[in-house]
Image 1 (cartoon, rainbow, N blue to C red):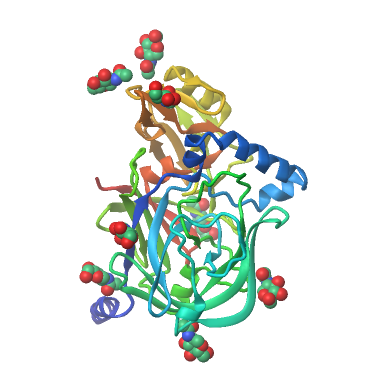
Image 2 (cartoon, helix red, strand yellow):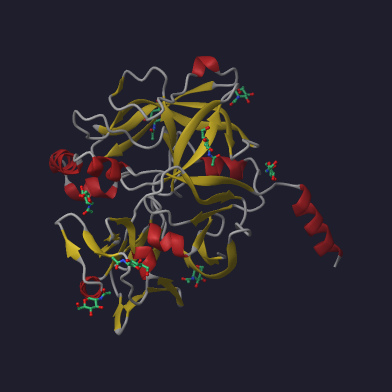
Length: 384
Ligand SMILES: *[C@@H]1O[C@H](CO)[C@@H](O)[C@H](O)[C@H]1NC(C)=O
Ligand SMILES: *[C@@H]1O[C@H](CO)[C@@H](O)[C@H](O)[C@H]1NC(C)=O
Ligand SMILES: *[C@@H]1O[C@H](CO)[C@@H](O)[C@H](O)[C@H]1NC(C)=O
Ligand SMILES: *[C@@H]1O[C@H](CO)[C@@H](O)[C@H](O)[C@H]1NC(C)=O
Ligand SMILES: *[C@@H]1O[C@H](CO)[C@@H](O)[C@H](O)[C@H]1NC(C)=O
Ligand SMILES: *[C@@H]1O[C@H](CO)[C@@H](O)[C@H](O)[C@H]1NC(C)=O
Ligand SMILES: *[C@@H]1O[C@H](CO)[C@@H](O)[C@H](O)[C@H]1NC(C)=O
Ligand SMILES: *[C@@H]1O[C@H](CO)[C@@H](O)[C@H](O)[C@H]1NC(C)=O
């Protein structure tokens, strides 16, 4: 009894729970599509990847094309402001260096970090490197340490945070001036880099968090730009937006991204039991879910989808049954409203593809609690 009282008091007065509001931005893919550059981009990228062993490239390929949720942070004293992409698919936190000589495609706001303007910035003598396949494209530079703040009012401070200062950033875009919607990447994947810890591990090491977890709550925002779109909570469950935990899946480690085992995928009367290849990547940087081919084929027929070769489209009012993922004995539904979205001229795009993967439509359907300590992801229904 006394113990319970004591621990309750203790948890109130020790570490804490912090959050940052997520803002929806137009993804890099959307920007390229709008500018008519998407096909060019894909050609350049494919040509680049052709030069290397495909299987190897794919195993280490970081893609930010579909990412559309960003947070505000500051680094340094006085604070320098950045918009970064919280990315569960990569492990390194980096922003662009003030003096990056070959950042061919600077970030949108031109926000770059100037170490000489921060009285608290320390060099580490280490370097980082995050690559597309062979490393000739990607981001690399020195690793520094400085004060990081996160959140609306920048009141969550992490001392001695290691981060990469990109002196190189290349991402296959041709002559066009189309930029990524962010100044840097805030890597949150479970794999530890030798030279630059993911900020989530730094927070855990410094005992800043109530629990060794972070929670993603994502909202659907269609084409809207610059609007609130959810919350990233460090150290706890997002109790304001998420209900109780209804089930979980273990991480399948070691891995540079979060993947889990899916037992079955069901849609209407089709139930596909996955015996092999049932590892699904959870990815906030992917706008799609991927399901076995038989389900995909039935789905596009049921919603009368049409295609232009790149995308599938359907009437925005089209509805059909949910797709159900069975994970660790629990059923998780993704409603058609999550998959038929982004209206344009009364036509909506379909965010379901063939394969197996759990991108934004799944992440919007359930709050994800990434439990680093217990190496599992807990799922909860959003309250709204
Ligand atoms: C940050 O400030 C907000 C508003 O003042 C407050 O609600 C929140 O609890 C603060 N967070 C922390 C971690 O102190
Ligand atoms: C860590 O930094 C050292 C020193 O710059 C470098 O030689 C090494 O390749 C880096 N390791 C990684 C994994 O980037
Ligand atoms: C992020 O910063 C921009 C620019 O200062 C501001 O307009 C926006 O409201 C901020 N977003 C959040 C969620 O704090
Ligand atoms: C810089 O290094 C000094 C000495 O190791 C340390 O006391 C200080 O906390 C570091 N500052 C930051 C912001 O990392
Ligand atoms: C698809 O087309 C058929 C025949 O035109 C129609 O009966 C059905 O309601 C349509 N389904 C949807 C989801 O629009
Ligand atoms: C979709 O439904 C809304 C409201 O029911 C209606 O106003 C709209 O015309 C419908 N759109 C199409 C393309 O059928
Ligand atoms: C997760 O891992 C734990 C410990 O290895 C195991 O007991 C449990 O059954 C696993 N849960 C699921 C849903 O796979
Ligand atoms: C919507 O209409 C505009 C103007 O007619 C056109 O340029 C655009 O390609 C259309 N979009 C779609 C998805 O059909």
